[in-house]
Image 1 (cartoon, one colour):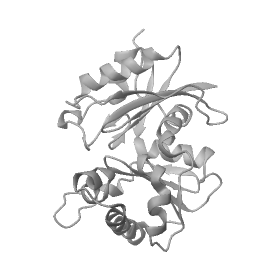
Image 2 (tube, one colour):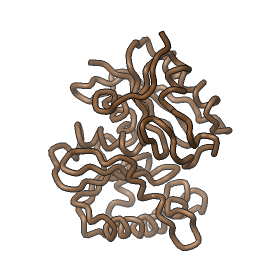
Image 3 (cartoon, one colour):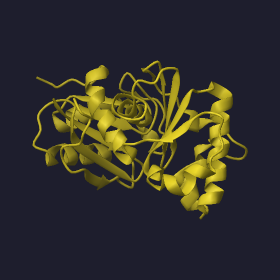
Image 4 (cartoon, one colour):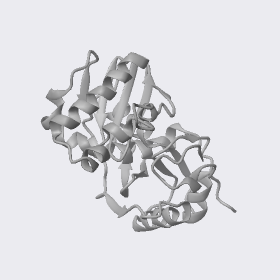
Length: 253
């Protein structure tokens, strides 16, 4: 089965066709910059541009950088405040003519790792961390998703949320060396350990491509590994979500 997966980030929106049996991307990734406004209608137009790019008919899975409950955006995250309360499934379905299944982006990336990557077959509490514009976290217990496990929203010192202190965006904003950023990220990891005591930590997102530069700087009691699928996990997991999640957008007949 071939499925279209889309991963929405703070700077880019990208999609590809995925083989649901193997988890492999069978097309090149197609990327469009996230609109500067980060508003629903503008982003829906980009979603249509992505779906139109592929010669594809069928449902679409989409990872979204915020809390998503029954297809509805519950927090704007790093997007425009007007997203709150929007049924994302219905918006994207109406814009594209494809039925959409939208879920939190870290949850989507976690699906990829748990089905095709380093998390496959792992029991206990596995936390998938996606490091990019924010700090996403997807939680799985004995292979089952615990949705919207947003650990990056923890308040920290003067910061409204710790992702403003320890994300890749924070690294670039404050012009941090890898060593100084890793110290911040490790502080976040220590809070994760304190709060939920995971059995395995998986680090993905764009920063995972530089794992060799910072992995050895991290100090955790929990076993921590790089996500093998790295920055493609969001697309792959979003596609697979079509099979695992209920969609809440419906085509008008």
